[in-house]
Image (cartoon, rainbow, N blue to C red; front, side, top):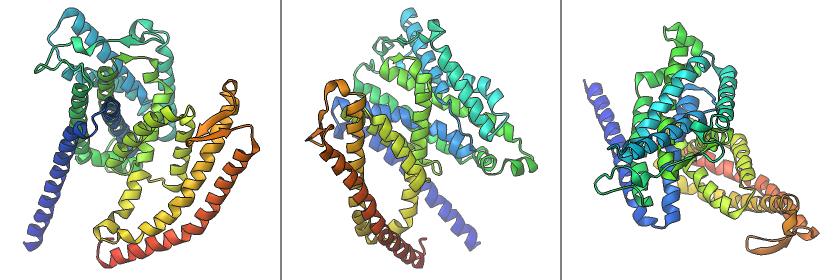
Length: 429
């Protein structure tokens, strides 16, 4: 009896803790515009909200069900295009529909597309599914340039969200109003996808991911589980597309292209597919870097590629995996023991990163931007790419950073092992 009461108490505490997390998230969404008031910050946060929904929908495939898709942008883009057409129809016929319901149109479009394409692609798993998803993605992307009446060709389809029905005197013209609309939908979608992952169906998705043969042996149809998960993921991706249509007021062929599918894969994997919060962190980080790096350098996509390679090699569990590894240290209050070692290793990492960036920027200057001359500024310092000195400095930074990191790495490992040993003795690891 005492064990049952203790178990119920732990379950109650976990329920209160989870509810508290969502309350904190709602408060955070509400107060962020008061902290970051600039127009650029509001635009970036709005884009983050869209990408969080998109990345979490992709993680329903990759992280939850083990389906690697190379064409998830199809459902995001189709949801966005149908949302734009619905907005134009509402505006043209003067129908009483506010902007807040537009993402539902994207959800229906993504769900229907998931049913159509999922009925074919989810019959197989693994590599076969990945190749089918790639083929479907290329099929829709090429159709976007052919079916101009629906996709609008290269120019795309435009709309005007401010002409929709006003809601509580909001016409969603100002970016702050759009931000709150996106934040509300983002919070609702996050809660829905998290709740779905805790249901028996979510557990069956995990079983199909880990061992589809055993799942079928106990009586479950792995293909049916993959199909349902695929359709639901398409529906949530369509909501993200509908939010993007409201935010940008335009949808073009890029939304269904391979670059968009690669971007959501990058967000999800870098954030970490092993936990629910991973894609959220990945979407926020990659969106922020896209906005910041695209202003700083034209070679920003190359940096994303290098970041992806680095995460695959050194941190395959993603950012969330790194945080989860250090969670016992935080609970045991021994995290401070590894901070000096991490700071020691951060110095050569930054040194090597500066060297790699300098070499990349000089190479880009001499090749792609050769007509603009060889002189440019790197970290506020004048650099001439045709001079031998910056090349030598860049190579020395890379070699020195690598050598110093190799020297610091054993100290990091020892400090982490000692801190984990203390956490184990305290019962936290």
